[in-house]
Length: 294
Image (cartoon, rainbow, N blue to C red; front, side, top):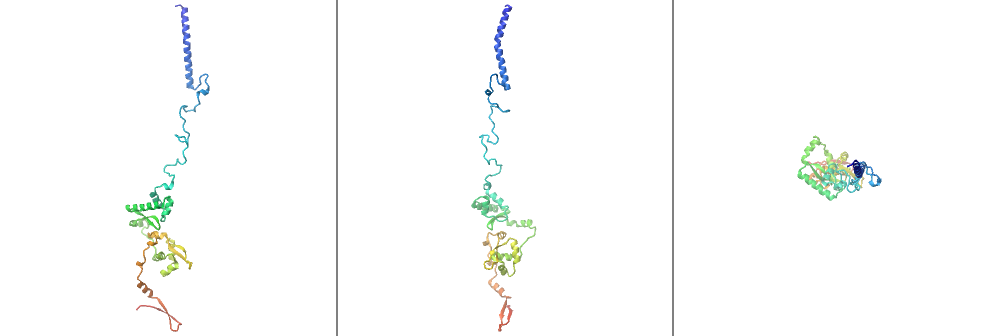
């Protein structure tokens, strides 16, 4: 083969390989443009789609905005973000018996069923049944305290069997008691109420103003209006009096008859030592004789 012929064949082979090299070069440019974000020649920016924010995958689902429900996309209902342990319904949603125990622990006087029903937002019937069930439970368990109905209300009291332990702790061996005069005056008020001071003094036979002031200060008696005829202040016993005696009402006071002396003894005592005033025959002098038995 001549040298001229060889050069012709080599030129023809180079011409055939030229399209292949151009296609390979074009493919490399397109790949580089995809990696760098550049657009290929002749392409418009709108052809590439909307530009995604930095750090986000354009094909990923958008994250829900803060303050919305992740599934429904709606704002949370007001009041649903309450702290654990709180109850939006308030006192009415509390368990009844523990609520009653909590309230009765802090009362300073017997609480009526009406008041408890209003405070705990329950029916009075439910309150009454729960209180009696609690009282029965404490009795069955022989607890150191009991729940009692006193002075038309309910309150916790220490059980009588453990009174010595309570006295030892609270009183430390010292007891503040009413005097005999105060007890007598209180008894007259309890059984004759409403009664005035003058009437109490007449029953006891001594002035009782000082004793009545003591009973008022201790909260055992109270003023209850005035007597229509004389305007004298009338006195009655208080709920605290019933509470201290453990009575539900005045109808539970013991009968007086078993404690009264016989009529003959009373009549004899009233006649003995009683002065008798007689007028002499002339009607000018009055003699004071004392009847005595011989």
